[in-house]
Length: 74
Image 1 (tube, rainbow, N blue to C red):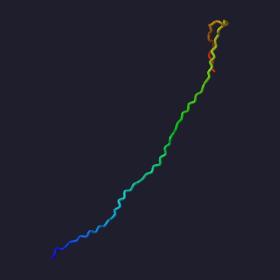
Image 2: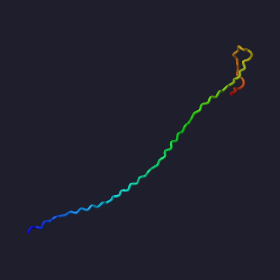
Image 3: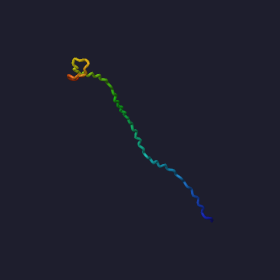
Image 4: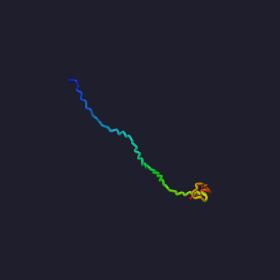
């Protein structure tokens, strides 16, 4: 008698394992406000008149004038 012959049958079974890795998506809605500040400059002109009074006597050729009264501005 011969030794017993051994035959091996391998049965393979597949099983699926679901690994769940949750991901949260956060949507950010952003509003950017741009403040623009302007500082316009206006120029104005002022015309000023100053009146000074002098008493120069009766001689038109004399330079001996003296100031009298106060200044007036308009």
